[in-house]
Every structure is written in C-alpha cells, then in structure tokens.
Image (cartoon, rainbow, N blue to C red; front, side, top):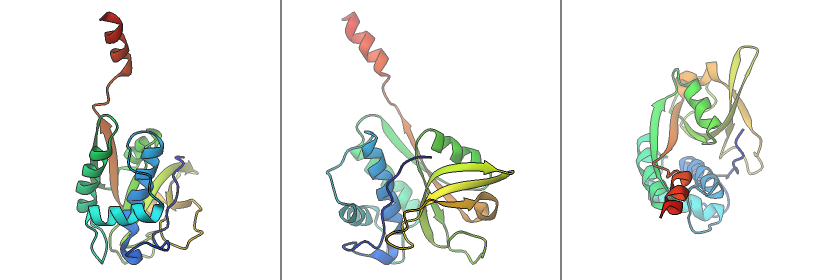
Length: 192
C-alpha cells in the first residue's frame, strides 16, 4: 500500500468544495510525488494546493472531466518535474486490474473517476478518489482508496470490491519516463 496523505475537498478555505473532488485527488497525488522527490512546487497548505489545482485544471462548477484532468495534470507534472517526463493516461477500468496493481507496485497512485451512474453497486457516482493499494482474498479482488469527501475525519482506507465497481470506474494512470540512469552519469564523469 502506498502512503498518501488524504486531503479533504471541503476543508475550510477551499473555494468550491462541492466540485473539488478532482482537484483534491490531484493534490493528494502531487503532494505524494513531491514528498518522493519526483516533482517540486512551492510549499503550499492543502487548501491552497486544492484551489491552485482547481484553477489550473479548469474544473467546472459541476466538477472535473477525466480528459481535462489528464491534459492539465500532465502539464502540471512536467512543469514541476525534477527530472524525466510524465505522461497521464485515462482508460476505462474494464479488464485493467493488473495494470492498476502494476502502477501501485511501482509506487504510483492511481486517480479513479466514478462517472455519473445510477448503480447501487458502485462505490460512488460523479466522484474522484485515489487508489493506493489492492488485495486479493478468497478469489475476490479489492482496491484500497482514499476518498477526498465523506467528512473531515474520513482518513480511513476504503476497500472496494473490484467486481462490483469495475464497470463504473475510469483510471487516470501516471507514467514516468526518460529518467536518466544515474549509473551512466557516474561512469561518464569517471571517464572524463
């Protein structure tokens, strides 16, 4: 499981708390990547970061679209990248459990969108959460998610059943590439 700090979308000072789940989910990921040394940005309080991302992503009063989050988050991560480049990919979750697991194993959280749906089985509808882990028990697959909504003290990890939620989820994967191999740099310096 990845240790990501949960950020509440309705924290006092968040400009548009009802529609800030996308920016709050992105803020959780950006703070995590900053803590890991992958990206850098001015130290900001959580509320300020959510507000900045709300504007930079271009979130609407009714929420954030997956396509907009993909494009703007890619731009933001590459602007703040310490080294290498970032790509952001959106894809329906259908048959992508192992891709999700691979991202978690690479210590990259996955932003999950539950598009508008009317299912009683889906964890949510018209809402973003952050995937931080997974488990398989008794042939059932589960995703560990942090929810930016659900109350100020909703810090617990929510375990959601893959089988019930697979048709209703969209994944926002982060991919890091063109990272220089430090060993090559070291040997090049030695040869000079």
